Amino acid sequence: MTKRVVLRQTPGELAGVVAARLLGRIAKRTADGKTVHVSLTGGTMGIEVLRAAGRHPQRSAVDWSLVHVWWSDERFVAASSEERNDVPAAAFLDAVDLPAANVHRMPAADGGLDLDAAAAAYAAELARFATDGATWPEFDISLLGVGPDGHIASLFPDRPEITVTDEVVLPVRDSPKPPPERLTLTRPVINSSKRVWLVMTGAEKASALGLALAGASYRSVPAAGAKGTKRTTFFVDAAAAAQVPPDLIDGDDD
Image 1 (spheres, one colour):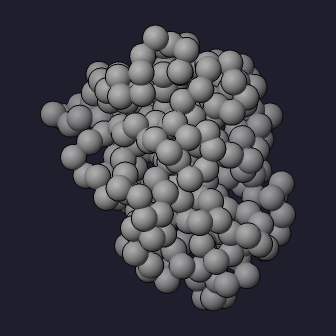
Image 2 (cartoon, rainbow, N blue to C red):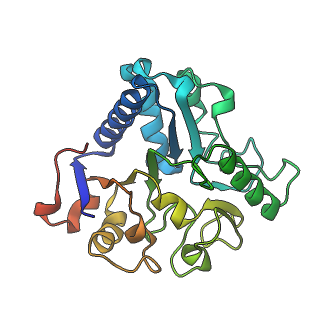
């Protein structure tokens, strides 16, 4: 499947574009009465996209009662810690009429479960919303950040987690990026999404983007192995796109 690249000059412009398309896609699905599952991400741009979505007028076009929000990974720290991915997302969640029962946060370190039990609990939560004999719900959109090393979610290069195909949620210990303990969806879960959107900004991401588009091994560049069943799109700013051939730049995504 061809990977698309959508380019905007600045991170702010890019966040606005991703937010508008996220809301547009969700609104279209809910207008047809369909339940929508979306996997969110943290990081600077992941949060900027949610902030832009929380301010965007199109949020009122969404039937939020049909939307379920999940996370692709989480830092296993206290529930109130600013290190978590879901804490900075609170402003977006507060700005939309999303039922609390539709917000599926990964367990926290102070929630009474150890890391392994927390991974099992989130896998069980995903299974509750699966259909047609599946083990997890099909995500309409998985929004992912990408690190300078090419990692996605908490799937880091040359680590055993990136090769696991028989689990849904994994505990991560001794993460190369702090904090050391995390939870992450596995690659098969991410790649079952209809649309995988990877958001990258800054010159420090240019090498990872170039390798991902060139078809590097997903073991060494996890972003290279992220593929939606319908569409895979890299949303990038000018600095991150320094190594992208002009013929790969796409002005639109549907």
